[in-house]
Length: 191
Image (cartoon, rainbow, N blue to C red):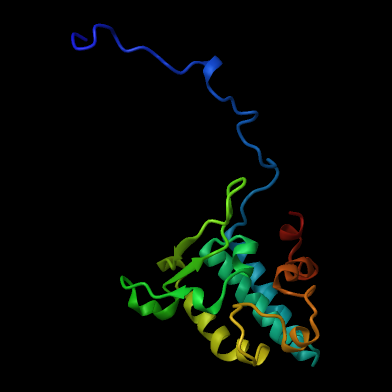
């Protein structure tokens, strides 16, 4: 007190600070999925592939793509547009965990941007709790993606080759999430 000549005083008051309109801006009726609901979602995505394949219909490869993409979104905590913007070259090794190979981290180039700013870039590391994603991504890139996209293309989640050659873009992975609710348990569909 002798150094400055006065006692400490409060400098932030109600009249000179920003007030929040509400404490929680989200819908209070929404909640995160439970582990069982997440497993049901993954089972529905895998079941969609099995159903299409058993009926000998087109779309089995895109169903496998969508399942791998959904699992990647969950394992890395990605937003939909961040996942759609991934390229094959965006996967990085993590020198601290060589067991994950080329899937040690995802380099997100099109992250959420602030108002008036360009998209933010970030690196999301693979965590031990979700190390199963390494096998999912390895299978997708070695077995599924080459059949889906035989030509050189950088996109991680390409449309099927016929759609690319004909310029169709409305059935891409970003729109795939809208057709799953019919095969999901009712507890998930109410969101």
